[in-house]
Each structure stands twice: as structure tokens, then as C-alpha cells.
Image (cartoon, rainbow, N blue to C red; front, side, top):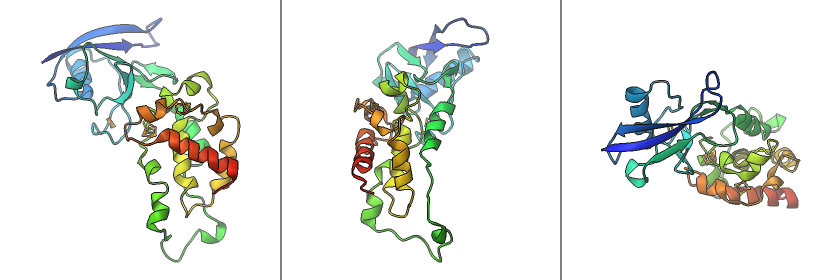
Length: 234
Ligand code: SF4
Ligand code: F3S
Ligand code: FES
């Protein structure tokens, strides 16, 4: 079938402002938006810039706004969308070209929360694996599912308005370690997230939870981090 697609294009080296490109793509109803974008790039206009890698919802590189909603292009079927399919880059990060945004500010927020296992000096070389009960593992199971696609952070109005906010994805990844019984960096992370750009910037807008392609309860994770910071309960 032939589908109509409108893509917000912008190449800072030659465009003064963004413009809408209109295309037709020959794809099956059961194919994904990513297939339609490939069709446009391969058969209509090879200058179209987009990021993708796995095409199966795992690498997190093709988050974009599709018909007004933050989605992964490789997960959405053509038959589930109204036409024309309108595609824009995710918001809140500088556009490098077309659908490719600069992810550096996003990863800067991620790095701020120290998303790695922190242990005490005498635990650095344990004689055996670090044991954890099933209940302890369950405590942070949801937040291990993050693929760092930035769909949540770039749907958050607080993040759009305040470049200092680390954003929901960073807090999700802090949660993953704060509530890990093997980790000793919880207090340090909670201190960071109690600061100016931290979890208390969140106004429970819930856009992040709606946007997450992994179904992570992002707002709940943020609330748990806030509660832990307030009651020192790690
Ligand atoms: Fe993407 Fe969900 Fe992780 Fe946010 S929490 S970066 S939406 S996978
Ligand atoms: Fe933003 Fe999500 Fe909070 S959309 S305001 S981080 S609940
Ligand atoms: Fe990897 Fe879509 S291309 S998540």
C-alpha cells in the first residue's frame, strides 16, 4: 500500500528554518514506521537523516514524535496510524539534522546520577558472587528495563523548560541502583537527586510513563526516589 508521510526536515548547514517534506512510501500495513522511513531514504530522498540500529525495540536509538506521540519508529505498525503520518524529532534536545538530535545533554543527566554499582573498598574483590534474594531483586526489576531511548525525558514539560533537570530517564537509572541491595551508593545518589536539578523538579505530569516503550512505571520510580530522599529510607 502507498502511505503518505510528512517529515520535519532541517539541515542547519543549508536551511534557515525547519520545513515539512511530503513523501509517499510503498509499505505493507504490518510494516513499521521505520520501514517507511527507510523507503523514503532509499527511494525518495537519500539526504534524510535518522538514527536506528536494531529495528526491534532494543537499542533505543529511533525515538521520534509520530503523530504527536513519542514512540520508537521500529515498534509502531503502519496500520495503527492515521495518515498522513507526521514525524518530528523528539523535543528538548538540539536537532543535529532532520530526526537526529544531540543526545549529549541527555547522557550528561544520566552520568550525573552515577549509574553503576558502587561498593565499599573491602567489597571490591568479593570471594564469590554478590548474593541477592528474589525479593531484593524484585525491588528494582522494573527500572532495569530501560533502554535509554530518551522518549520519557523528551516528553517531559519540565525538561523542555529547565535544562538543569536531569530528567526522568536519569532518575529511573538512579532508582535501578538505589534500590539494589548490593549497592552502597544510594545516599550519594539521593543527595544528588535532592539538589536543584533533581527528582523534586518533577511535577508528576505522567508524560514520561505514557511515553516509555518498555512500559516502565517511570513516575512511580520517581516518586519512590523522592520518598527515599525525604525519609532517608535506603
Ligand atoms: Fe526510554 Fe523508558 Fe528508559 Fe525513558 S525509562 S529512557 S522512555 S526506556
Ligand atoms: Fe516530567 Fe514525568 Fe515528572 S513527565 S514532570 S518527569 S512525571
Ligand atoms: Fe533499535 Fe528501534 S531501532 S529500538
